[in-house]
Picture (cartoon, rainbow, N blue to C red):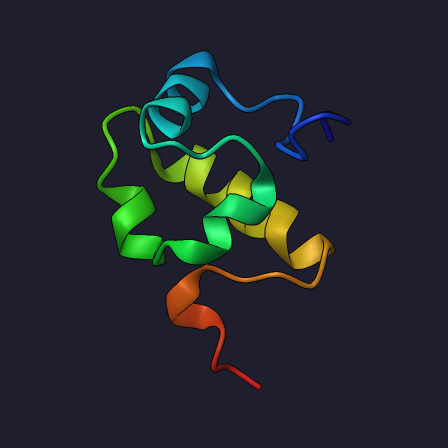
Length: 70
């Protein structure tokens, strides 16, 4: 994990640019977005989405739509 952002170290540059363009600066910011919203960002592919989902789960966090899962 990147110590400043919390994003996976191997997250591709296009995915990082897509997140920055959407105003997502830290992993925790993703909890305000649903998984489909993140998926629809240009530059976020299946691999990036999986990496982000796993990074969130490792911290006990979820995308907005997933927050009601028990």
